[in-house]
Length: 88
View: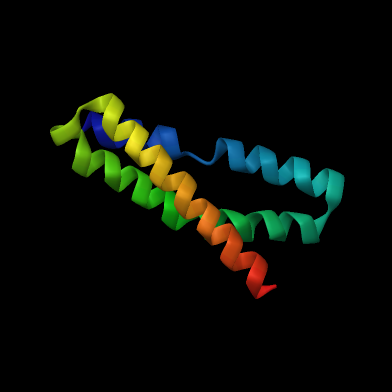
């Protein structure tokens, strides 16, 4: 019920719409597409971060599960960045 509505509001793409518009107006199409690709590449680490919270919150409590989730995100995002740099 309310959790789904809150999740919808939280994930509504307001910030990405503004960011797309700003990047496009300042740097053009290629930079906007590059940013959009970056968002897609960083989506799996973000999903795993959210899964960490879902799975660890009942066991570890809020703060510890949040720390583990954020650290996991940072590690995975770093690995994604390294892989992408090597593929270019």
